Length: 314
View 1 (cartoon, rainbow, N blue to C red):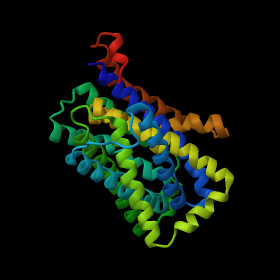
View 2: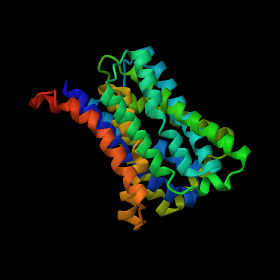
View 3: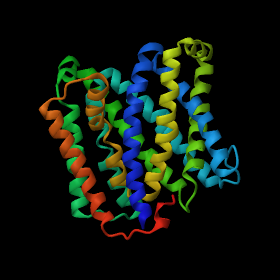
């Protein structure tokens, strides 16, 4: 029973990891370009995961994995790491990060519907209220300031909305398909390694077809960008995706995705601590609403469980 609590804790930890990843990738992306960062982070994360898998599972790569798991993890990688991220990055360009992240905050709603439809998950009234309020709080924070909306013309705005929604749906499809692959207590670390391997092969194959492999490798001469990409690879594709799979394996989709949708909220105190960016009263209010409403369902469910030492074993 405590695995559900660990799933929610892993989901919140995932949000923290992705918040740090956003800062690191933004810094390195400004120096060497977003495509270089995306290819590099997947390659670096693959190396980290191979070592971790050898240390914890006794093999450098999963063996004896059933074909259906390969299939679902492959679909999850394509929809989430390849297509979903591509749509999201395009939305960043067209309508800006604030509105793009607002669209991504609809993931919990879609995930809850898919969880009810595909897995028969029951969502209580307080849990649904928490999801709705968390999404509202996230949206309130990321739309604090409307410069992105005023600058976009109608055609670009509509295209950006479309790409943002496709990015959100890609994330939902990623969570759902990964859940199918994780049935039967399959190792989340093994699943993460397979997903990263598939995603890395695809993005580097596309880079080879476009003649951009040598360009990517040359950008590694920028030492600051290389260190930022390495750090982003550890806390994002390595640790973050690993934790996200633990979350979807042990928690309800709606609750897990709600907690994992908090990076735009977490970034407010994080950016203030690192860069002394001022936080508006609206941003602070949105943070309180999103965090308190997201934690309420998890804390309510935790109160039903008894503490036992074996509960701390993932």
